[in-house]
Image (cartoon, rainbow, N blue to C red; front, side):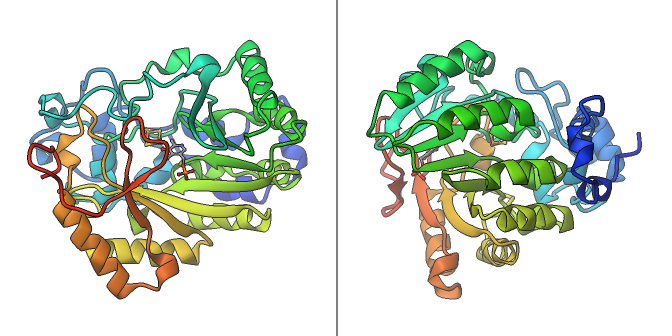
Length: 357
Ligand SMILES: *Cc1c(COP(=O)(O)O)cnc(C)c1O
Ligand code: SF4
């Protein structure tokens, strides 16, 4: 199938998005994403034999890769850093001590109505379980997504809970990927949040501007720009190659809508565990109007152990970044510790017995 041109979406008149009969281009792009490993590999000129550990029938967490993201992979390179993030491997089935199904303790946090209260002053609202890409290292890969997505009833209860707590000044929309909601549903949610007087900020954690840039329509940017709430978009890119021309244009549109743009990355073996790559990522993010925010040590989720970087190596990389970059381009190197209400800075190498030794 021929991927629809993203450019068509960027130059479209706003009327296009008001015509309900016409599906937005990004939905088509999503439907057109690669779901078969063989098909993705063929698009790169690779045979399945080029990936000795390939596991096309990986249980539980199927492959999902938008064509715009696949187009940024280097043809003929079985070790491509973008391919490695999304290709299911047999290694995912190996049990590894310390890697569990709920590494950050979200299942035990109060997730009533998709509302998570583990950060002071902030409420995390899981608005959908869906994503446009399935990252093999994701800590939510074993999550009961379907049970968490918002329905009108759940949203009403969650919004009422936020409205009843004047200590909440920021709502973080998370998922899954909150921009998977279509404009209508997102619009309704944002309107309800706007009406809560003690809210000051809205934060959206999304990988879509990077992996499905056609989602960043003019209509979406207009909707976000009109907000009374200061709006922060935290994107997720791990490697400079993920920020192609289309992602850059999408991010520039969001910047023009007056959003604050931040990035979080996950430190991943064989993807970005080298100072020149992380340095180039920071520089490229800045070119796109985005400041690096967090560099996360991997959450020890079952199936992702082959991405782990030792804490000692992570600390060396953090040091190398401080040496080569201006301070504002150095992300905070952190990990999520279950039960702790903030990110924990990585300061010491892992203790004996840690899976990050
Ligand atoms: C850590 C975290 C937050 C809170 O982020 P801060 O930037 O530290 O306020 C929100 N959502 C998710 C999914 C997180 O992991
Ligand atoms: S986009 Fe984010 S939530 Fe979705 S699979 Fe990737 S890391 Fe997980």
